[in-house]
Length: 295
Length: 221
Picture (cartoon, rainbow over the protein chains, first blue to last red):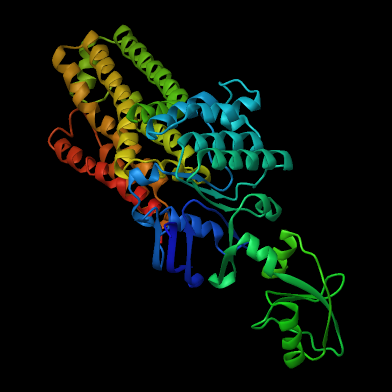
């Protein structure tokens, strides 16, 4: 399998606090992969490491076959990067910013940029700095599409966007990937439900760098939530079979990748006070919260 | 690519630069009026005596203009790059980081140099209106450390703005301030003639130095 991104035994710290100590994963070429995790687990730090803005404390990151801290200009031309907050040159206008980026990218497709920004209904003299968050996101996305990259890395594309702009963003992403083919997308977002129709695989990043990577379809099929009742007071805890327990919901429930029969056998042995209830249907957001926890 | 970079830099600084141009023209016009006034109210022998015996500089009003211009050009060029971490936008461009930064500072230094040349030519012309050619040349030579102050002000502010580490930023500011203090110690005309080549050589070290903060921005640990 050719990996567009490969991370091996990555460790990084801020001062004495380790963000990850032995993080390894790969983003297969041609796939749409979402990096999900709670606030503060290090998603944006990971993006910065992949783009060479931070040097890891240990381990290595390779992007399109090159070390992330030494990406050649030719490789950077193949990577479309959306910075958190839709960073852009605010002092430029719609037309100026397109003219600025065009000479840097040999595969520049001007029509993809204007196809998106024309929907804004703004004059081409309109400054990016005078736009709303959603409008700016369209300009930035248009620039990334026009670059025609092989790899797109979108760091929290949904920040500051209302539902309409998010939907537009996703529609354009889907069309871009279906029409163009052969592209890889690595995306982070806090809007979990958007991932359902977009991604092939998910990488759950947890505090300390624990990572779980699997196809989204497998996650949706294999991750279960069961309500339960307690005979007694000893609340079950996460272990080899139980991923997490939520005692504070409408009714207490536990989350697991195990099939009901295996779970029941495990509970009988280790948590006999737990009486398993019905399985609950989960949205992707429910499953994400179940896996990563509420707090 | 280079023309795109230069256009971008111009977009950032154009209003500040045009404002500085107006300021320089205004100050040079003021200088012209001051010198003309001196010759109208005093005998020319007295003014010559002030200038070349008492070593009083008639053109001191413009001495800090290059420094102010250098700092302001750097602020308008690199301030927008550092707000919100926009510097990363440029560092992600498919271009070597050192070439990118050098093209930036080349543009900024060039825009400062245009103002400096304006000052030099105008000073030569103004003094040459009332003094012999040798005095006009002397005025320009006397003003050279002030023009160098513009270079130091520009590069010192650039280093401080690009540098991600606070401690190093303070070091750059301190070194630049110390260098600038050296350039404004004059007590009369042409006092820097002998030492100016050394000062210029030291000032040229700013050129490779500007790569360091950009490199540290790119590879923060």
